[in-house]
Image (cartoon, rainbow, N blue to C red; front, side, top):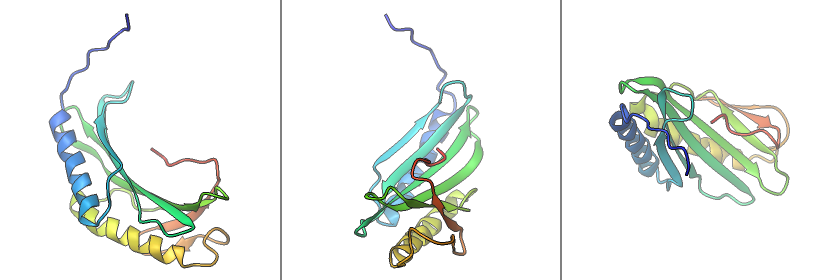
Amino acid sequence: MRNLIKRSLAGAEPANDLRRRIVAAFEEVGLEVKESRALVPNKMDAWCVYATAPAPFIPPYYATILVDAFVSRAGDLIQLPHLHATIGEAESGRYRLLDGREAVLPTDLVRELQQTLDEIRLLASHDDLLTGRSKHFLGGTWRLADPISRLPC
């Protein structure tokens, strides 16, 4: 028989409320959420809340957006949502990773998601998307990433 660990559900309601707010922000900008969860990772005493969605496909590029945050067992937001995004090419495995959209206020999520989508569309129109220097925008920097590196979550 498997060893089951009993965990307290303290903080679950505020964590799920935040998860629903993040999902609603994705939907407001027209993105279909692929996955959303509120969970307590092993050896942590806080809820990890996240949602992820693919951005509209712009051949030959793919893009993904992820928002994550942490909520304490007491129900307090202990890490403002971070917005992560990538745009890349499946064939080469190369992609750009967004840096700089950390600590987004929940009330600003829709605006920040829309700005990220606008940048993804703009990046897809660049001939040098997967080469050259980092691309700088108001909300952050899109840097080239190693094909084997992963999103920070």
